[in-house]
Length: 399
Image (cartoon, rainbow, N blue to C red; front, side):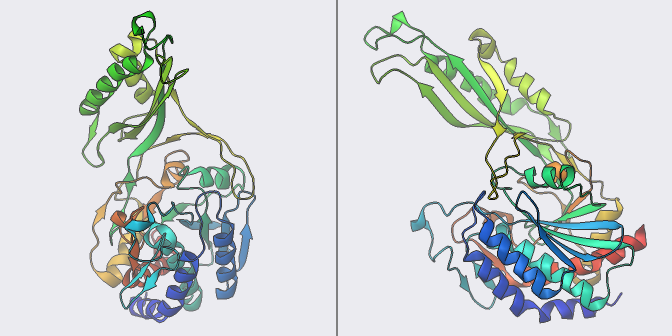
């Protein structure tokens, strides 16, 4: 394989990749509102010569190169979070900026750069004849990941009936290759009280006081959670609190909390729910422990509810998919570090739920995600597009 030709082709496409990324940044595309971004990606796919481009009923854009039976996919979620406090930005988050090294704007690292490198990686495959006859390459621009990671791929796999041999997840990887991350789930704990007038609180049962005891036990539970040598320790933290009271002069008769639970290898949603259910104050006060459901419709108004459970996944380093990505990387850019994400990705469904192998490699840095003054690096766009371009042929060779 002529790695130097692949790398040169990617460098030649940098002006087009930069212009494409800047166009995408200018289109606001938070979860459930991604239509403009999706249609701009479809237009680019058609312009660079994808063999087939379609938008599925959920609103994911799917671009295909090749006609083989083996399907290798590149996933890039194309929704972003909001901009937060505008005063924290030193430039317009949607107008963005560009200099010799970087492109800035909301979504630059998380993760519009991933779809840009994927589209042009596929173009390089076509230019240089890098797609084996028995392989089709799918580039998927996926929706609603920021709201509900993996929901898009639950739909793609179970409703579109698309099942790749493996998937490259193009979330930012800080120049490394990733092969897993912790899972997560969203838990609600609710306790009831009895309201009464605030002037005589002893007549009632204050749900907030009950929850205060539960919160202290939840906090202590975090220190006792399972540790995995590769992924690290499971964690949990209280992220929201809610209450109900007839007035500011009345004892609260309901209090609830949301818990963000990060699951390491060996933990399940059942074990996580049981750990909280078994806390002394949860039992003492008869608190209800449950898992949230996600029920927001996509930009196409399709409703596809799911539990807010996002399983852990880890792919062994010796797996052919990992080795194909490592070989492509090392052929052009030296020996890579193989590691893991801190945050969660669509891999929770692709591999965590469905068992389809995933490997992570994407432009940008994790620390840029959801932060003000977000940016990515042009060198990363070139690097990832080049590495992507060589993967199908290397994987087919190993198989």
